[in-house]
Image 1 (tube, rainbow, N blue to C red):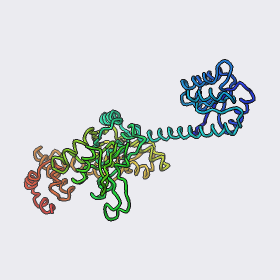
Image 2 (tube, rainbow, N blue to C red):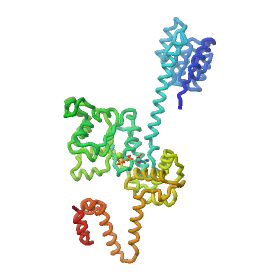
Image 3 (cartoon, rainbow, N blue to C red):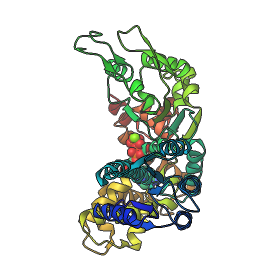
Image 4 (cartoon, protein in one colour):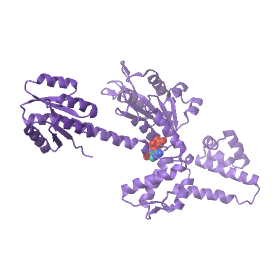
Length: 465
Ligand SMILES: Nc1ncnc2c1ncn2[C@@H]1O[C@H](COP(=O)(O)OP(=O)(O)OP(=O)(O)O)[C@@H](O)[C@H]1O
Ligand SMILES: [Mg+2]
């Protein structure tokens, strides 16, 4: 939307009023000129103006009255007073009461135009900022997070409640469930939204680099530290720091982080100056941090510092009602991007999507739909447009259901199923028994015994190397 400034001129001298109006219209502004203070007040009460230019001395209702009305009815409007030479004192008084500026008669039109242009430029920037803000808000607003399952509504409700506080948030959820999207939403709905939102992926960097990245360093702190560098904590001051994949940080960094969380203070690497920061921390992890604490991999004290507000995003398979809703949104997005006209999803493909467990969650669904939109040559997405992983899932399940042919007693069928299931777990963990046992939710010892029982010792043993 283009910003169109509106100006109201109130002056009882026709010549003055008309020449100002003409000069401002020539600049491209929307201008309305009126001859009495009463009329002026009428218009101010009915409409919004960016600038009000008024003669200070008017019969009946004067410039001060107009200023008072404007301040009350249209607080965003800026009032410029025109005063006669000799009544500067009154003009100064008007400024004290809230007028933006005054100009003394006689004046050249250029003088007035400079004041107006300056003001308009300022208002335009202000306006553009608001528009930009709204756009960003829209991008990260809850509307950008699709889902109407009760589980997702619960998550969003919590986000709304806690966004504005400064509490540390721990977002958990499987890969691709939307942890980063939620972190964005929290920042952009908090009072900190005009300040920085700094992200650090803790898994992407080795320990020493991560430390330097988080806390910064002084010149000469280590080989290659040619000049001082600010860390992410400093850059996020007054804003939000998003520590992604927090479960991956080393014990040494855990200690340092704990101190910042407790004291909001730290030193740059190689530095002696203690820096204080005001940073809101949001962390995310796919890991079960509580379990990591039990296993001694994650400090318990740090866990409690981070887990002040826990937000768990359930996997897509636990909120099937969101699948088609999200899929349809992605169809719109990717159709527009690729100039395709896909209208929806065929009933067969719908069935396949709803019942597929989506190990990669929303990201996997997003990629599946993007691919289907690009490949599809029908108005509706067909099963053949869906990726191999989805087809493979159904092929495998068919094998399983084919196995259950009611040809054997239940105990035998269960036995059969267990054997197949264990083989699959071993295959998927590439023979790693510990991983397979974890997948199956049993101990290594139980797995070993079951393998023996099913005649799978060899498989388990050979492949475990
Ligand atoms: N509810 C949702 N509505 C719309 N898009 C979503 C939703 N949840 C996730 N997405 C989209 O799915 C993709 C993955 O989301 P995101 O990166 O936030 O997940 P993540 O949990 O951080 O993943 P990872 O664990 O792999 O880092 C993004 O493109 C994101 O925009
Ligand atoms: Mg992520």
